[in-house]
Amino acid sequence: MITQDNIQQLLTPISHFLQCETPDSWITQAKKPENLRVLLLDHLLCELKAGQSAMYLIRKYAVDQASQHSLLDWFKPYEDFAYRGIGSLETLKGKSQISKSIMAKSNSPYSQDLIDKMVLLIKEELHHFYQVLEIMDTRNIAYESIPASRYAKGMLSHMKTYEPATLIDKLIVGAYIEARSCERFAKLAPHLDDDIAKFYVSLLRSEARHYQDYLSLAQQISPDDISDRVAYFGRVEADLITTPDSEFKFHSGVPA
Image (cartoon, rainbow, N blue to C red; front, side, top):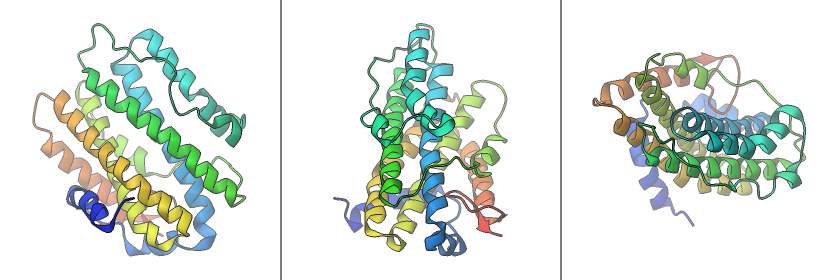
């Protein structure tokens, strides 16, 4: 059970990391009953995309060819459900654990730490995907694919295009996405039904760890101090959160 003191301990470093708070106008929009459907649908897809982003990172940078195929197989039931309309809550049950070991490339310059942290993150994100789907099922909210918000794409458009700077930027962006998710779960929980509120509070610890993992990996891989780059993406992220946004989503900006 996460206490109020635990929540504050988790959120204090996140509030220092993020360059702005979620605007009250977004909270006002998010707590409207008519927006619960899009909030849950977008949250569901965000969990899948977070897992996919981690999977693509280690496929590209860290694992051997056999492991690349194992990672794709791991995601197939989720991608079949989300993008092809194949499967159900029942067929996804118990699929969040990978059945095969993931091995590093023999010549990878990146550490086993990248694989270990990303595989754990993937397991958690896929489990969260299933939990959101369960909540939707109890409310008779049918799954449908919805377009992504501008948020992640808006940050990724600022990445450098040479290595290892590209990888470092991807990790920093990942840190901001996880930190903002954590902040929004905490801000939303008091305004939602008890079961969703408890679920969102239960996510805080893993989201807080994910953002720290991304940041530590970025610094570990970078030959230089990443503080300036972190601050730069903090400004980009804050602009996306505090400027008018024509679409309401889990990571959207100020409702236009």
